[in-house]
Length: 148
Image (cartoon, rainbow, N blue to C red; front, side):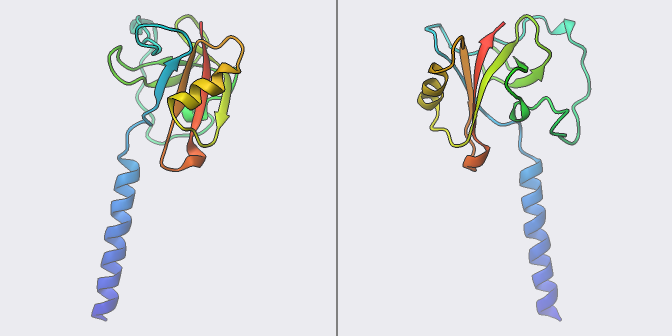
């Protein structure tokens, strides 16, 4: 009986730790870049945040309604909600000024900046790129973007 209780306790603690790890993670940390020479090569954050309404962050991500760039498709737009000197934080947004149109999306393993540059070099009209490189290669992607 004691062995069963100890085993059950270990399983609960392990599962709780895994859930805490998975639920406590921030947005994916991707890396932006540009095919043109420039001071930073990063998409700049939207300068006038007062024009966009603020809404509470969703508690659960829904693939079709999420603003997470993991769910963006070619033809949609994203905006950079990150700071000018920090990591970019892309969010799916309506296409407008100061957004980036997704011209092409490459899913699957990426090798980083050079891989993103090489993939986007084949896309006509791109101005910036963004990649997400996770520990699980099937979640990796590259976005070829065009500044609007």
